[in-house]
Length: 244
Image 1 (cartoon, helix red, strand yellow):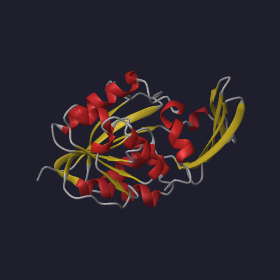
Image 2: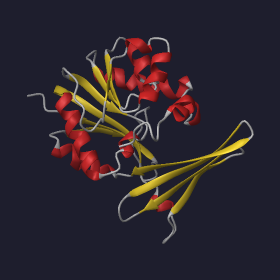
Image 3: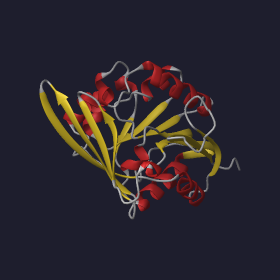
Image 4: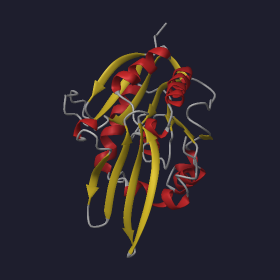
């Protein structure tokens, strides 16, 4: 699991902008779905980060608690309006417990991939399930591994090429590990970063959910709840804990 080594102050300072996450048009649909699924109950965000989702969700009247490993990301959350009001427990989202039960536990923007082993991803599902009240939901947003775009034998895939940013993923199809490489131009200088991840298939996530006592309730292509298709590049999936 990444700590401040990957998500340090330098990364946290530009994280929302670099990832294209600051636009309300990308935030409002997420918050609307989460608020609906929470059904007025409390929500727990795993890897709450800079609070880009937790803050507007709390503004809708949903009590939100966060778990986060990076102190630098939490510092950015605290700097935002209302950020001091979001309770955050520092620790690994695969193991850290917080008091109480929640109607919704959620993990967005590919963050399940930050857990770089299958064991850690399984543990994350188990930890989420342990925080859910009966009938509660666990939601994940994550990309579908783009391996069908790789020619046979190739291991690298460029996903963005602009004047100021080059992005490329390098895959190991044996271990499901991949590294996301970024080269960005800031203030006339080029900066390079590389972050390790583990990709995971929808069917594998369903098995992890089953091991944690959860069942699939819904799977969509996007936050507008459109159906998943054979060419979908991401999915939003919801699993539910039995009510009894």
